[in-house]
Image 1 (cartoon, rainbow, N blue to C red):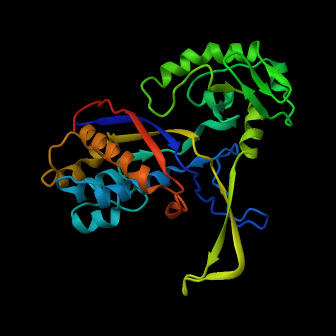
Image 2 (image 1 turned 180 degrees about the vertical axis):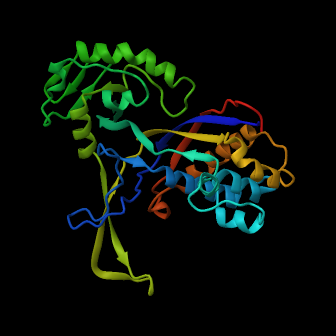
Length: 322
């Protein structure tokens, strides 16, 4: 049985403000808020990433027998059904769902580091709850959890941090330093973030949520009549934006290990697909996409310069053979 599993750790850094709509209807001052996870932090949905990467694959990526690889990676059962009349998969069964979704599995990109501007420099804040998502257990003492929400990050240097008049040193800075080597090792080789003592601050989960909520960007735009192309009189909308330099983390997995259930599909496709190592295909795909998305952007307002991101991948060790 031929089985493959490729795992990629993905880091995403916003190079310009980002807006991915939460899909809701709002009647308050903000007409369009960014999509957030269950905690309330901004996120990039896996479906958005999948659509963006698939769009690049479809329009820009060059590969022999490209359409078959597109089906294998991203799925589309209706097209598969047309091209493979012998394939007997019914809606609701495992094979149908697998082929509909494809063998690339996308997860939501979750917030990792949020940028706070401190006298012209960027400090990246994170919290124990966020670090736990990457299996780093950071422990605050009880007294350090009780920050007043009115304290705002004001100043920093190599030895001290200030939240308004409260000087952060001792345990908090010691804890940050203690976990710094773990963070450095985790992000070793990354061009997206340089982990060092002067630009990383771990704050309590409570303070993290407060600072993120208070540091979104907001833009006002005009409402355009799509039939005439003319701005509607006295109609404006407000847009909530994730600031540039925000860093997200996610995983993309290639899974092709469903055994005999997919044998009929493999038999149908084997004569039409080149014997190309999938890890090479995905590495070239991600490399091309990283250049493409930095220029074109993702989400809403890309024509206004929003949504440009750095996309960095690491991993891809193969288990099994294609």
